[in-house]
Length: 507
Image (cartoon, rainbow, N blue to C red; front, side):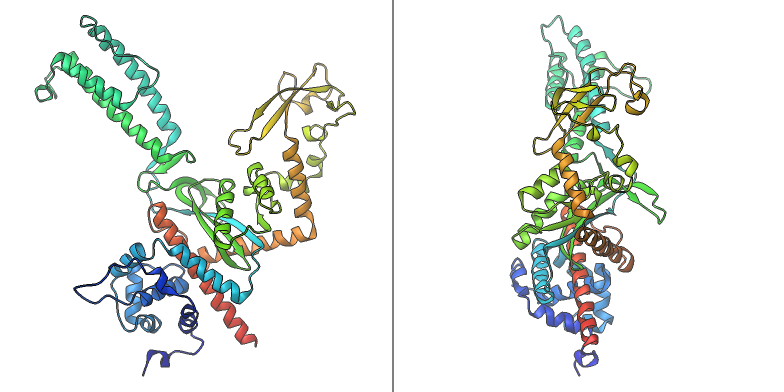
């Protein structure tokens, strides 16, 4: 008898196999090297099915567990046709064969599921969650601390060059003194200094009872400073522009605040920011970022969605972590409605006292002459405009200062300093915030907000608590993306199977 004879017709492995037969799996397996000698390789299609089914049933499955399941589990035996690859074989297959095509596999499986389920891709529920990285939590490197150490080292190098220049004054040689130094320049200076005094490192003394010469000490300091500068340059380069830290164990992991218990207590840990966009309970798009905040992850996620489906969603719904000027402008440019909360959304909509506070700059009346006045009737005059740091669209703030705050009866409520009050105004952003409030406070917006908490946050809840995927296993951004895509494929296949079974039982 065949293994399929022992399985129920509605068994997950049979429904999974029938579904995968509708997808051309061979196109993802083109990079397999040709076989000439040695043992015959395992069927790559069966290997791919086994891996995906493992992630579908377990949420996350290790390589050794895949090996064990092929030996004892009828479902895995059915997919592998009684063959039992080792965990090393599965590791090679995942890391080398399907690594570059895993996103394509994810998109193609989604396309097939969405066609069958008639998934609405115009409403996309967005959320992000931080997953702890497989890295030592005490091995951090901070970019700002590194930069401070580098500038302190520049001061030490300047002081050393002053001593050396005074020492070499009789030769006419002089090292240039700058505010910053390149490691290559320090190395070159050390070689020149050694050449002047004809220093031989093999003759250097060290240890107790030996007295180092001035020339030896200067040369050793120069080489030490050059090596330190190289170390600082490498650390800053690893951090890059968008990060403030990284882990020595996994250079791609950034230190982030993660809630570690049910009380919401957080801890600073190396982690990755996993972003998902959910449509009708399916993960339509997924991305892995190294940014600490969700705000910087919105545009890359939307671009990934467009690359996969050829358009942007009409209604991207997200929480207050995504509401920024950059993201709102991006939505306007690409035909998306603004359904992302901003930071003060809850206070604006629920706290009437705050919203109508007469001392808020946005509530200051503007007269017919175009002059903004405070509750005491004093005029605010434009002092200057400035660009907002980190803004990609040239956003500017207008800085206004009150003409005279002396003797104002509202001074305690209106300002905190002894100077005339200054306010920052961006009328375009204020108008955007009002548009977002109108969208989210409507009946349609209220339904979308409710659905976002159910679908987006619910998906992460299932992944972490029901399917026990709480921590990243692999290291390096490419390997982590591979892992997250496999988990997302398994999640969608798991959800699709459950929906199919519910439909069959209801029929």
